[in-house]
Image 1 (cartoon, helix red, strand yellow):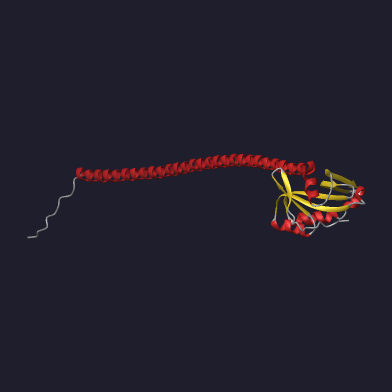
Image 2 (cartoon, one colour):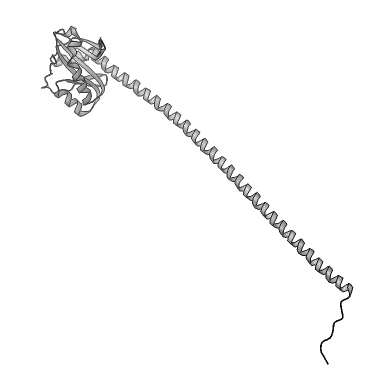
Length: 235
């Protein structure tokens, strides 16, 4: 006897039940697929919004950094303006101090100190003139101080800081003193360099060239040439 037992055919109700189950599962799968698509869409939207937020945050950060840079630049510019103003004030004060010191030295020489100094060196001048100016055609000149006695003339160049180049320039100019200042044609001409500060080599060089060397000390002045010094005559 065979062990196989023939199954009876499904009834219409069973077939419909199977079809309904298949349809139900298909609908559930479709719903799950739609839910997954929705989740994917939401994830894409969230990523987009997150990227937009990140860009906005980066933009705001960049704007803050730009504002901070501009603020620092503005403060730096203002500080530089203040420093420039302070530097201008210090420069003006330095110029005023220089003008005052230079003027005091010239005044000291003109008001008699130069006469006293030169007389002590056997140059018997008795009259001084400050800032002697002249012009001949296009040529112009100026001598800071000129001391004279009708027979001898001492031409003085005054420098705040005396350098060798200043001495050389003065020597070149004094050679034509008589041609420029005709009133001293018959006089013997000497030269002198007066200064507030000087390169050490400049003072030595000036003396070697036969010039009187006059150093300012406060409101006074003194000739620093050696006792054996003999001035050079420039005509």
